[in-house]
Length: 316
Image 1 (cartoon, rainbow, N blue to C red):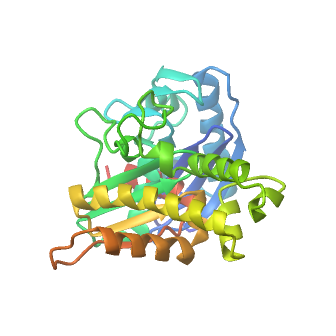
Image 2: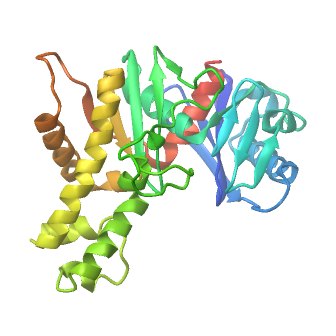
């Protein structure tokens, strides 16, 4: 039987593939977790009902009751109206103006907070490793370039709730088209998707490269071939590192945060990635002799969004 001396906080990751819910303790750890497939294409009412049923089962299986829930935090992709608990738009969920919080509270009437999933992940990493920082930024290098900003312990959302879209700052005017509709966005150069395109282009131009032997080109293909001494791969990696690092330099110049964390699939390169980024930034950023932000690799991986959503709700 679970310890019921304290109320429990719950975080939910509303993903395009799965709904994942977890109970999060004061040590920023998930003590119990449950998941079910997301019924993509179904109306939001169906998906939110599934979410509520998942939370109910999670609570029951952990030995608690609904009355033990302190709050529920939900992290969702898309543009989020945090104040009103609405997903304005989320293309992969096919949500448009979906009143997620209102709908969820029909089934479980507790305090509920809705966050953008990247903001939730950033807040989770902040609560785990950065909550002594006045300012904190997380950058995720995945399918796109996402992230979140935390200032004075609060998620920065902008006045309209959709601030902090760091992947769509301009890296190159008139550059590569970005899924957002603009051209030259940081995401178009520094995402894992972009790296895969860069790797494939290099293979096309240099079929003698070790990378050409890869069964499937992915975000680590160039890094792995570089480690084997492949010159073409080294060129791909160096160019990619320059794209990533220039965006981080812009973040530093604008915000001078205490700490920057790098997450997403590419961050699995760990110290190899981090060392290259730090070396580039050290040689391209004017520091004026003052301390600079600490840059490190995110540690919570897929749990970050659940932990961050849970604490965002309990910290409301």
